[in-house]
Every structure is written in C-alpha cells, then in structure tokens.
Length: 135
Image (cartoon, rainbow, N blue to C red; front, side, top):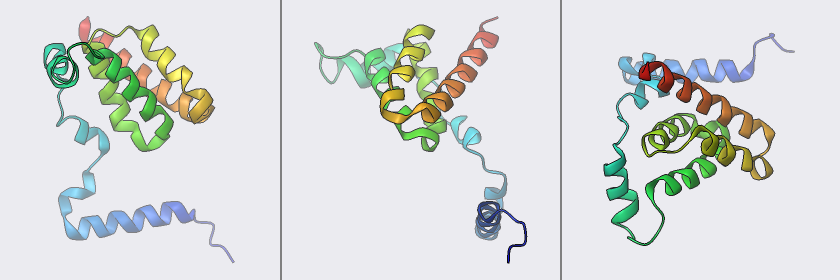
C-alpha cells in the first residue's frame, strides 16, 4: 500500500511547489536567509529597547535575553532562527558562554532533552561563528 516515499517529504515538496508558483523567489528562501535581514543590535540599543527604557530598576537587557532564550528553548525546533539571533544578541549584551549554556540546560526539565540538545547545538554554532569573526 505504500510507495516507500516519506509522507512528510512529499508534503514539503508540495508546499515548495505551491510557494514557487505564487512567488518564484520563495523557492530559494531559507530561515538563515531571513536572519541575515536582522543585524545584531548593539548593547546600548538593547538596553534602550529592553532594559533601561522599560524599567530603570528592572531587568537589564542581558537578563531579558537569557529569559527569551529559555522560552525559545522550550519551543524547540520551531524557534531555530530566533534562538540563533538571541544568542548573537546575548553575546553582544555581554553574556558569557557559561550563562548561555546554563540557561539552555536549565530548560531540559521543562522542554525535554531533545529540545535542549537542539538549542545547545544552535547556540554552539553561533558562538563558533562569533569566535571565527573575532580572530
């Protein structure tokens, strides 16, 4: 009864054909391409948007971003581009690798090991890219 084809792959192929018919440029669209449209904000800009402006005595931008990373980790694979972008912002805001890894690790209790592992993989990729650009 089966043709040996993965139904998920068939569905994705069908959606890609639909997208190509509606807009040929969508055929080559990737989430990573979308990420390139959003540069990393400077620490000062993040503090203005997420820290000092909202509540001068409240959470700083780094803490807010660590909370965001925790929430995105719980979302799992749905948040891949957002996880990468948040890690880039965290590094700019002065977060250490240890803080980033601990935040993701803490979420294993709530998100499960697969979601935590995926988030760690994404974060490590961003941190490696950051190290390469620093040298």
